[in-house]
Amino acid sequence: MEQEEIRQLFAATGAVLTGHFILTSGRHSDTYVQCALVLQYPEYAARLGAALAAHFGGTGAECVAGPALGGIIVAYEVARALGVRALFTERVEGVMRLRRGFNLEPGERVLVVEDVVTTGGSIKETAAVLQALGAEITGFGALVDRSGGKVDFAEPFYALLSVEAVTWDPAACPLCRAGTPAVKPGSRK
Ligand code: ZN
Image: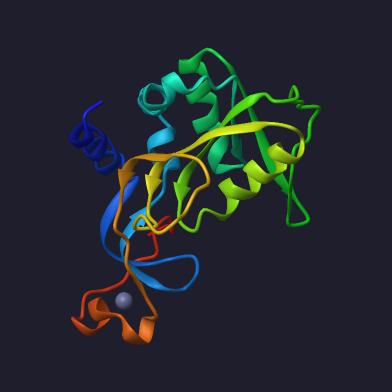
């Protein structure tokens, strides 16, 4: 998939919106990212998974893993394209774990993926859990990088889309100052 085609797909499905938004954190932003809106279409999810898989095709991943919830569909579709299995980690009382009888072979090569990387916290915690179980991490992938390229990864990182997303404290928001109304994405009208 071409970069422009990916960008249009995210825009058309409302997965990446530009405007004036109130984020869950309470901060304001000019960009809203919600990958569930593009992933709700299985056909698009499969195409995005294949595009991500194409980048990591030569790395010999034997398994793809992602953190719940955001990483589940992405891991599944990337794994489908690579012809390997998919598993997910999940938080139990705040601690990332591999549960549900999922297992890894010693030295198994695992690609770790996520929908959106902001601080890289979840995806790195997933990698740490899998490494502790003997996995070898081959790389990190995401649909969207909204970190502005600020996250450091121990292995190669690749995202389909880079979204520059600035956030402000409401009191310092230039969009509020300009008088445009802020909207809370996902809330019913
Ligand atoms: Zn504002």
